[in-house]
Image (cartoon, rainbow, N blue to C red; front, side, top):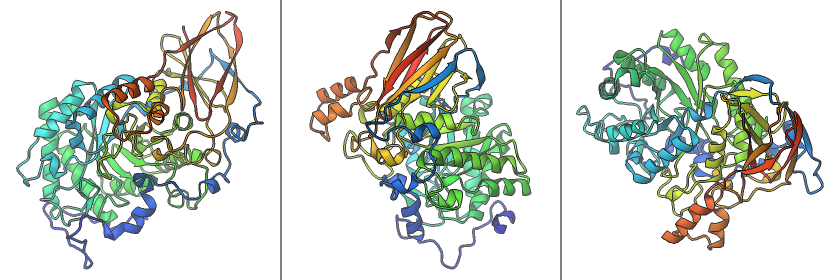
Length: 553
């Protein structure tokens, strides 16, 4: 139910009335929500999710349930693909945005190198960062004397390299904060403002500065998202206070240019979407999109009403479909739905999830593109259990290569049935097909559940059986060769080489160069075809491996 306080509003310039049991002002922790954080933010502590095997009691997709069961389960899977039968479009929603640690790390050389590579190889179009208004950015560190030196440098670099800012309006400048509730190693303040006018004026001035510096036409193509995960520990206020934060933010941005898209609530676990829409409709406030986050190991009770409702592999598509239905049945049924955080280090899980989310969302922003990431402090080793498509020193992970192969898919989807195949046609008539061998969570440990600790530092290699796919390719029109690019534990991964070195926490410069070479994706192999109209092509995929198959026009 929508909090009735949210519809009352707070006028510009008014003071917040603090509750009797006010928020603590003398700690960098979040004692008011410690139990909630411990339960709901395991992904940021990178703990193995408890009860994983019980989750697999739910029904898996029919093709996945039969693979990875054991050495004797080696019957080839036959899949017919009509290369001339398009069944719909394939918007590359996973390229629209990627996440990043706080904005200030955009000044660092490694982050910048990672950004250039993510844009070039993975097609990332925009980047969403936390902490735009943290004091270390300097924008409002002195209160109303705004300083844009650092944000200009970060945004200039992004735009110079073809990547737009996806502006997350967070966190609270200390000069405006109503308490000392702070978050993470970098101590981002997550309290509401003492005075709403301060927040409104800062957002308005920041927006006006961006328009002046980059032009109204450019900024009108950005998205402005209000805060991050206000339903858990990233917001020390109430739901009503978050809705007031949204009111002040959207009014501030739209006062500069009504064309700029503003949305939220950027919640964890797909929460608050109906309430957000109801609040904006009831108060005649603009809402250009709704945004939320979903991780496969999120507590399912808050999403589906009970724990263990679905397998890890089903949580994201089932949850996003549920939210899409909430939007379509609301007062604003045509709002774009943006998933502004999700993650996995399993190439097969990534491919399967993206395939199963087709048509459900306009954006799937992967968290994060770079391992320059310090929510829990400075990483202690070159390969670590934190987020990123790229590791320290820019060494690519298999998740990076998965994104680079996904980028090569076409824009028209071809008929494949319910199978581990995503077949597409490109604008020039060439064919790109992604195939995968996803091992269900119960059979693969924590590898498939979106938890980076399961694969990033080599703590767990993929378990399960290889999968033989027999692809019946119809409509070949005499094509005589097929190119195959693979990504798995041993192809496109530096982990085996690092383990052979003895897992050095601080590799030498020579070792780093060798790790880069080991992580480089090999050139595609070329296999001959008979040149007939129809032919069967067979491929064997290791556990949680993927492969891109390409046919020229």
